[in-house]
Length: 241
Image (cartoon, rainbow, N blue to C red; front, side, top):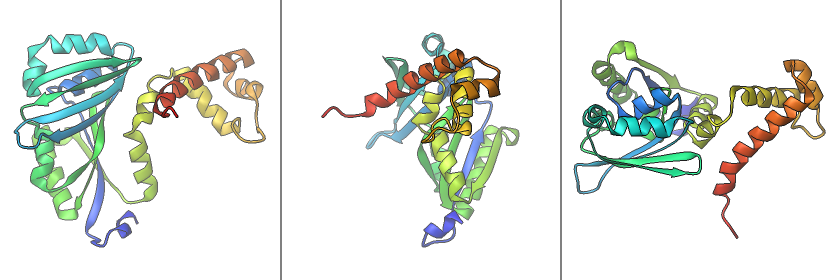
């Protein structure tokens, strides 16, 4: 059990998903662009404002950001005081200030901790919380009351495997995944399953193509394009000597 890592066995992790976030600026952006958005939020020390910083990728993100920024409805409903967008190659950084953050305040009021960053996934907010069982129960009740019971899903993270998968989902890896086409994702998954990346290889490009009904040339193209997209972002994280 994951709880054995704590001296206080009453502590627990939960994964929560909130759907239909119609009034959220980032939630709407995630829904319209069919993208994942990695989000960090914190209260500005000494002020009532909250600072938000988000990272996302998507073919139409720029278009929808401009559309939403021009629409006072989402800025007003999200209590956004200032919002800025910076494009870095194919990634978008969205940052700014909120006058208040009901989502974050619900966590504070329930005395639970949100593991950051959390993620918007196609309009749904996914996040992991840590707290005592009683406080977690209270948080879930408050979230269901605020957002509507039918819009809230939750389950305990009681094994290290579940915890690892949840962390991977709410990481830069999930953003990079959005850069891959469905065909590239399918080929990569089959290549891994077949042992293409083993040493020595258990399967070659011809074998992968046979499994998927594609030619060796097509498999090669998909793999090269996928590798380039993945390595391009990872290379930026490697510091120059």
